Amino acid sequence: MELRQLRSLTTLVEQNFNVSRTAEKLNLVQPAISQHLKQLENELGVPLFQRHGKRLIGLSQSGKEVLHYARKILSAAASLTAIGTEHQQQNHGVLRIGATHTQARYVLPAAIHRFRQIYPDVEIQLHQGTPEQLVNMAIKDHVDLAICTEALDKSAELSFKTIYHWNRCLIAPQQHPILQHKQITLKQLCEHPLITYIFGFTGRGNLNQTFKQASLQPQIALSAADTDVIKTYVREGLGIGIIAGLAFNESEDHDLQQRDLSHLFPWETTKIAYLNDKYLRTFQRRFIELFQQETQWISTKNSEQK
Image 1 (cartoon, rainbow, N blue to C red):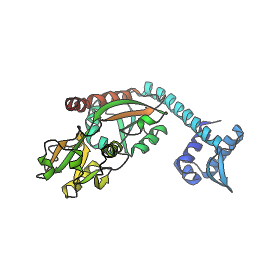
Image 2: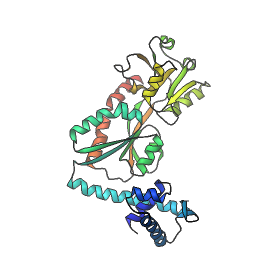
Image 3: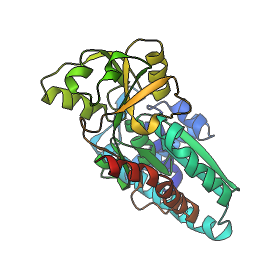
Image 4: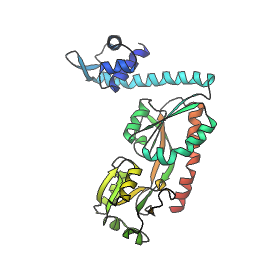
């Protein structure tokens, strides 16, 4: 059994069983991929694939089990390589970060700026996606660190650290009638069209559940994954917005007013995760420390609101 055989298997699955794309991804010819897969099946003595004629269409049950361990083996091999690289080029390399838009746009810049000052020779690759996509990226070792609120703690294949807690705020154009209320209620929110995050992003599940428990039905006019998109449509008068409180910037959003909503909704937790047993290089561990330090202001501000 060889690593190249396992790599062909995992890449084939990621490329939806398309041998041509798998070969292109691995810079190999198609016959080489087919040979790797055949050799792996012959060596293990079990069928790994579901077939339609000569075409591969899925994994057998045995194939699913083999895939699980193949990823672990490839991850371990990558960790061994990282150990060697760490001793030869401690301050050089690539840091691959996966994050949602809110994290990438509003929280990460300060930590990345400090990191670049310490490690100018480390390339930072910033990948954006949904929480589910970020989990998959981390499991497949396509990113070193994944950062978001949802999903990371639900995968047994990932280790995670809690970074900070946050809640929501209302945003509305200046002079909007809802801003006349000193402390806004759920019922008052339901009297206006709302613009907020799509389900699966930035605490939308808990937001829906809060209204449901109060037997209220909000008027969702528009939902988006991008906080800046939500702000745009609030400015267009489509409705009032509910966003992460940390995403409101008084200098940039001077044409809007915000109101704290932490008395209405449960607190959310942002986490950073990485693959179990992954060898983290010194600069990767250092980034986690910097990210925790640079988000202390969020925790301090929120502890005053609780």
